[in-house]
Length: 267
Image: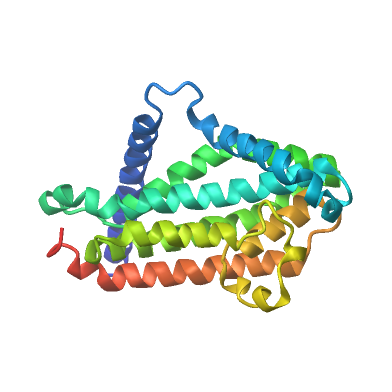
């Protein structure tokens, strides 16, 4: 009986992985068909926005970054790549279950594969476009391969946050079709409450207590500390980013599984 259950589980996992690969390839082909830069848009966009923010705020905020425009540029870039990854992966995943409703009504498929495939497609784009530059910056500033390895910890926290919220948002959209309008506001609030183009030091003390609700804040702070400070990685920030990721992943997965049985009546 145990061997039969193990074989069935292995078969289901293999089927899920094969389906995931197909959907990832399809998502990437559709997204970059006819595109000039392809996956490197994930790098070009934050670089362009970094230039804009530096031109506007660089001189005003450089004093908070050791009176260095270069440090401000790197801080803004790291913040932008995090918020861009979050926004792209979760917003795309929000529509995934509803957009594939007709297919799900015809064929029995694991529903979670649709939002997860979009998150993984964005991970591939991030690894190819942004991660190499983050690794180079980390090596230059820290001169330590340990920092490069530990850089993966807050990035894992980011992936877990995005996966959890993607599962949660895609499930909620089945029940509430006006969710995309509300979700745009949520993303905008997360963007404003994350110290991306402004230093965290200027945030009033009365407001800082609310920023702990922002799951991207520990991720951004940990990446900056590891990649830009040149010091030993802060264990507290790493742990905070991973813990935040695990909490949101567990929440999203639990809600998705809980509501899954009601999807087919509404798709």
